[in-house]
Length: 211
Image 1: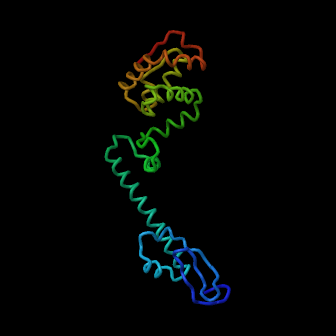
Image 2: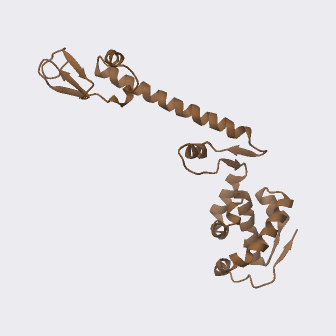
Image 3: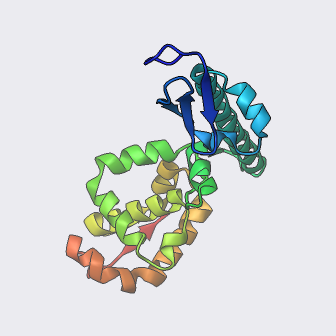
């Protein structure tokens, strides 16, 4: 019904996107046509006999679109889940970023949350991790490996030595992997030294790594 002349003779002009009163010629509403793509004029005209029905249809179409997005996310989640290793989970939020064309770390170890807490409380380790992320070789390591390296460097800076077994236990990496990380670190120390020496001028002292 027209709110101006009370006429019930209402026309739905899909070409211009208006709801028009035939009685007085007033445009009384707008048709949001983007949700009607792919359906016939007759079907659309039947669906939008009233503005209320049009809004309802628009909402339903929106729900269907979101449901399709959820299905796609779940499908991707299941695909990644099949390739999960022990103690590793799939991050659904990361999958959403990947589906939108971004880059994100889809797999996360169950210990990652605890390591994030450590970084939040340990500013030195956090800053060392930032330095590692700038290194061409070390930046490609997993999050746990980089935290292990950061803790190793922190111990070397402060104490001049480090206990690999203790760091391995804390970061949930294997002892063998921790030893490999220490070996890699030795090959990168010359490159890292200028940045690390700004934090603590102890790298000139002998370095001892125990296991």
